Amino acid sequence: MYKLIALDMDGTLLNSQKQISLRTQQAIAKAREQGIKVVLASGRPLAGMQDKLELLHLTSNQDYVLHYNGSMVQNVGTGEVIYQQIIDGRSAKRVAQLAKELGVNTHAFSQIHGLITPKVSQYTEVEANINGISITEMDFDQLEDDHPIIKAMIVAEPAVLTATIAKIPAEFYRDFTIVQSAAFFVEFLNPKSNKGIGVQAIAEHLGIQASEVMCMGDAENDHHMLQYAGLGIAMDNAMEETKRIADHITLSNDQDGVAVAIEQFALR
Image (cartoon, rainbow, N blue to C red; front, side, top):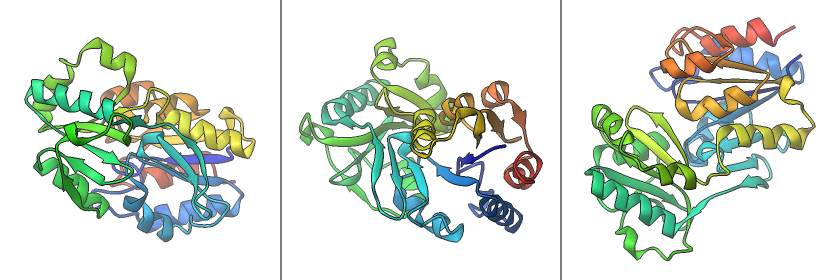
């Protein structure tokens, strides 16, 4: 029996209109009625998840959320942080310099200034609009080396980003967790941060075994949690690599794939 379900948001829980279908809402409600913990696990900041947490009634002292791709995990009701591993200004400046050398844009999430970028691009605007947050334009050289940065990102149109990823030096993979979260986003996290570590932190906090965890996702930033879970499920609209590592492939995010999987594997 599964005791914890962790759901990616964009491309998984949310359909193409960025909505949660009624069938999916009902499936999640039924799972919770049976005592199953449901956790949203997203690359978004908490502000960009709040309305969906409220819609699903995941806002009590018994609810947990994983945001910034596992860089932060906390109790929704109390705000207590149960896991946090972030980077710093020195690291953000390295990523910004790499982006400059490769001819692409960058942005980052500062714990002080919010979403920051040396130059506003259409993809930084996408980030801001999805999450309902503002952009602060600033040169990363202004950051102190120990400035608290949650994550840094390289952003570019999909074809350019694919070519850029192939040029990232090997030492960056040693010093960061690097994951592609969308066709136009690649993220640089603390090496001790990913969604798998985040889901594990929640499971251990609640005394739940990995074999009792179900995770669903559609992109590379979901791989760690799909591999950690007793049952890792990819959406039909997922990246091909994500489908290859999954234990099961459900229907797409526009076909209630999350609801179908919950009904099939979790509900009594």
